[in-house]
Length: 498
Image (tube, rainbow, N blue to C red; front, side, top):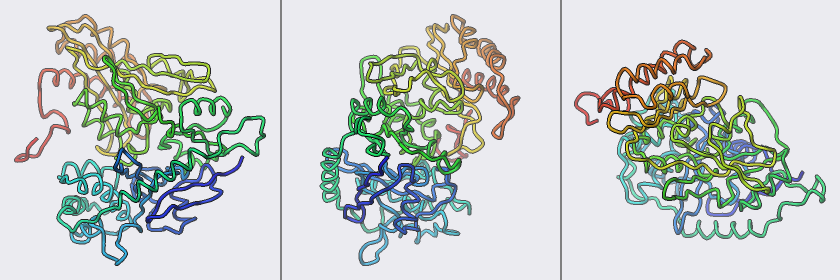
């Protein structure tokens, strides 16, 4: 295997780094290779946000900025992008960027360790909102800073800083110049050496494969079945940082142009496997606005900016939050290889703990989510110890189609109760054809409790999980009857708007 060159834009110039191993993280590249120690390592697992940096790619004639965790992001994944770290924000004369100045003026830094990460998330907010002429209110600031933790508990001044940025003198990125440089890098990528054939020998094989088309991606998968497949690396990155696993060869699906698309059809929306979670959930919430709160709780924004819906589904973690929802919505997945494609219900993908039916030459390519139908009432519930940026103890998604007072169809997905995300078929059978009532909801809750035998672990006991399953079904009933203020999403302190 040979290690390739990484090219990206930083500080107005194209940076070129040679001989970077395929499993090197972006954080290690910054701190150890480039001596950019302003970016901090806190948790090493994408949980605290101290390592946040901002990436940008072309989106039409403008730039799309994304704050990401550099600790679990592979360095090669930024090839062809623009990068900003906390060292890059101040002007040539030393003048602070509004993201930095607002933190100073509002006393937003306490011990200071988390501050670089907060500043970079603020910079991403500034570019995506303030620079576009939009304001930042407290709710938006809370949502977009949910991936940054302050262990000094000083969130109030940081939220004040987010809202204050727009009142400071403007600091503009020279987007035209950056776009031109991105186009230059794209041309370099097009003429880059193609994936070698196996006949050329192991030494000629690239260590980091990132094909730009679906056809090339499938061919690479067929030629290199032993390569570690990655998307946003929000899970595989932990294998590197926490388990110290090494990968001789990596296959990155996120560069295939076809899989970066969201396509709308008369009866479903097709989400490519490389679409970031943030964009994928925006598409789901477009059709079902009630999912917006769940989307923001799925993970902090830096994780949603890196992770992909396809990666979450293919990973198949029993506590992955996407799958219970997608199962309840009747989602199908499309697997592809050079031999063709096959489609199946999402729940049929899994065979056991983090195992699935995919052959060694197959990749998950598309996620097909049906559009809402008349009479549909769907909700999804995430139960975790921390409201924001936490892993679920249990996730329950319920989707009923109700005509009059009768349930004509029921679909329920559950996470955190078995070795895989599962469909609650007993509870569905209890509801299908029944009159929708408190009694029916109670019976469905009892069926949920009896259908699964969850384990006790660090997140919750088995008894707690079983109890909560039934209670959530009662909550679903109350919400279907229009009850308000029965969950944290709709709760507001007295005197504040809901």
